[in-house]
Image: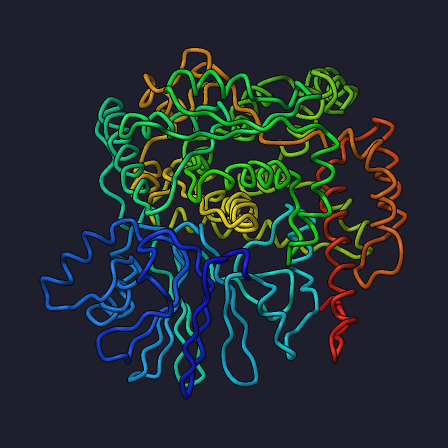
Amino acid sequence: MVHRGPDEDGFHVGPQVGLAFRRLRIIDLHTGSQPQANEDGRVRVVFNGEIYNHAELRRRLESRGHRFRTRSDTEVLVHLWEDLGPDLVKELNGMFAFAVWDERERTLFAARDRVGIKPLLWTETNDGLAFGSELGCLLELDEADRGVDRTALHHYLSWGAVPAPLTLLHGVHRLPPGHSLTWRDGRISLRRYWHPLGDAPAAPATYAEGCRRLRELIEDSVRLRRVSDVPLGAFLSGGVDSTAIVGALSAQTDDVRTFSIGFADDPVFDETRWAREAARHHGTTHTEEALRADDVRALIPEVLDRLDEPFGSSSLLPAFAVARETRRHVTVALSGDGADELFAGYEKYLGEHYRRWYWRLPAGIRARVVDRAVRGLPVSRDSRLGELGRKANRFLDGVEGDAAERHERWMRFVPAGELAELLGEPVSHPGLDLVRERHADWAAHGGRDDLNRALFTDLSLALPGDMLLKVDHASMLNSLEVRVPFLDHRIVELAMSMPSEWKMRGRHRKRILRDAVRDWLPPSIRRRPKAGFEVPVSEWLKDELRDVFHDTVSGPSSLPLDPNVVRRWHDEHRSGRAERTKILWAVFTLRWWERRAAAKSRSRPSPAAMEVA
């Protein structure tokens, strides 16, 4: 995992534990090496991430008699453990995955941050427990189970992501966000330590108060995330979220560095003019990289060959490109990720709004006029009409059923029946079960707001399993640390307490966020609709990637994917009869990963076959 920490390594080996660490120097460049220990050496820690309130915690711990040997945020963890044990996580404001070994108690305690910014994976072995930041490090174990988990495979082909605690491999687990793991005497226990409604403050009494509190928290979150002993900058796409973060950063410090990428030969996907406008508005030193289609396609083998698990969204490619360019100039970057899940930024949240109007129409009008017209529209991404057709057809696919069914259908890449055809077996709807669990969890904690229920579901499923995993892959492959101010747990708790009409009124989304940061947004960006961070993979699959797609998905496979179905879907996509970009890309990256894993297995002394369990 040198890419995650190219600056140094560190080890501790004891009678019952071995701890290993790769370091990317951010805080305390000279004395922050890991693993770190307390005063008598009985408590040791390895830690990935940042504790943003570490200075405040350090002062409190020193007042209670603890002695510090470094200036790093890591050292607060060992002393907090001495005072609070497992409850130390409640004191932390940060992004983190860490493990504490207590020699006297013969206990290992590991925890992941509240929303899942940093990953932590684990598996049981013949000797106990193994854990790490990436799937690949666990696969170095000779006894690692390399069988593909069938339920996880269904999730991946449905959503492009595998939600925790599953990973694609049977027997390897991802610690869920807001959870801790304790190992003692061979026994493992998991505990949930945070819920966004559990410890949330009272909701603001008025919309104006909500705007004020939200802005103050954004400012304070950015202030905390500015702390660094290495150069820091920010991603800037020119959307509301990244522009707001740059606005808060520019108000606090001079000479802000911002970074964006554009697509020189595809104006539909190019956002550089918006990023330039935002950079001018805030007076930043702006760097942009103009990519051509050939440049992005060339990234495919470079990125996919370095992933130790398949990733179902092509947005990883531009994310990798902007991270690579940013790392040439700085070591830390702020990002606007997370705001869409908190303030209803995605178009799918409009589904419930349009659904109410749809069901008010007479049944005959719905069937003979609306449904027939929508199903007759083109569904490609290469024209406005085709994009309208794609969205309208997706709406109709999820317009029926209860709230959980609608939510899960609008998340899907393909309907359950088509997925069953691909796999050659019935699909058990594991995704629907998960969505129902999240809806019930929301209600059990007092949640009654329908939109916030959907946002909470995405916050706990889609955000850590897709968006944040993408950010971690793209940034860490380039040895870049990315910090996400909107996912400060105080902002998450405030957002979840707000009524839905403060976030979305009619077709207008992210209402309160836009109003809270109004002066940070140029007028054109203030009015600008949400745009995805994507590349034109839909068109590439029809032409430029056609041959590499067929070469990758063809040939022997231990995965239960019907090649005839994949071929038919690709033909339908190329002809424009169906829009299949997401599922085709998910299958493509899955098969790429399988072939690469098989090649690695053949090179091992004791190869293990990949099977579906």
